[in-house]
Image (cartoon, rainbow, N blue to C red; front, side, top):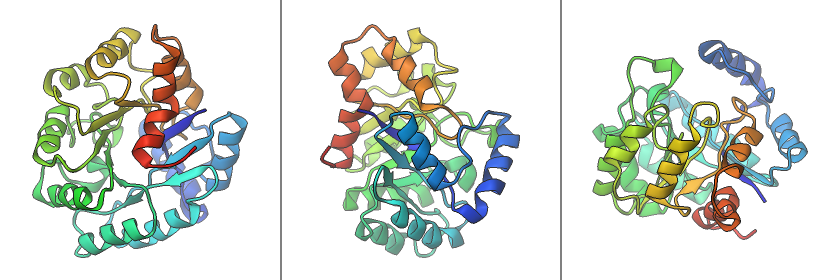
Length: 265
């Protein structure tokens, strides 16, 4: 079984525009057309049992519409997170609504949202999500949209996780895209931190993966791809070739995700 903890899709009316813009920015391949129906079908074709949908509000005015859409997709082989924008005047009420809608967590992208992850406007999200029991997943490290300024770095994640112990953090891209040495240096206590493998297969060496595996263990790593920007089987192959037990791989492929999401499979 596979639960891909990191996928993206968009409402039909904006999918073409969103995918093309991001493709041009990142100069990368795409593996779906960005629409939810194509995403569902591709997951089935590829043998991925569930995909965790991670929408992002890049403006405060978007969050309600996006979360309503995410709720509509939260069935079948799609498990939806919600999103908020840190500048929203309705941030607390929208987080409560995310919980009441049955969405499974909150996605933040500090680069796209224009804030460093340690700013007070971001910290109030972690505090409230801790109260609500909503895990928070953040883009970490390098992103081509903000290639000279990293808005979320491993030292920040370590600090925020310590300050908000009731909040469960997921550091996407193994805690810091292209900054994995810093992950190992700064993050010593991962009791409320998970890491996903999204978009790491192309850039992370096997040696670095194993260093992180030894540092954080099989219980803290989640298989994720970053679909449509990466094919899930790239990350599956990366994990499969590691010299670790099948039981550890099963935890990374789906058991850790199911436990974190509190779903029966």
